[in-house]
Length: 185
Image (tube, rainbow, N blue to C red):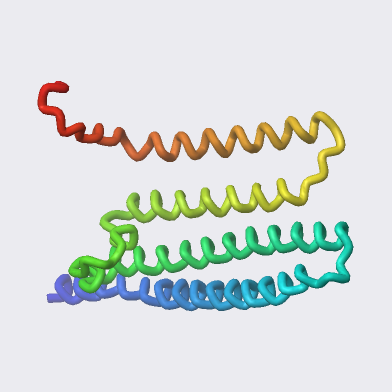
């Protein structure tokens, strides 16, 4: 009797994860909100680009600032997506399958999480994208004063390429495309 009560309490203790799910959803919505406000101010800021009183240097600075803001916006939306995926993944792993996601033909299968490794792999890919966006953001702002600076930038780009290659290679081999020719065996 005591064992059944203890095991029942132990099993129901998994619902404490709901706190992390709700907090992650709130964080995701907050980052979506902040990033959308940033988009609004970026668009308002860009409207000055058509101002005929701007000289070429001011226009170039405005363009560079806008590109930087757009990259930051992409970064913000990716972070919000990570938090959303994390919340949905935790819920599916510890509480219950989301019937809405599994039964709908229009829902994305990226949000259907089967295992903890599946969640980690999907989060790692989005985090890698955030890091790539951050590198791009720094590369745009970077001033190259020496050959060593150029080598550092080239090395960073090479490492990003390697990380993307390894991430793609870890997904496993893809099935060869069907040619439709039966004699091509």
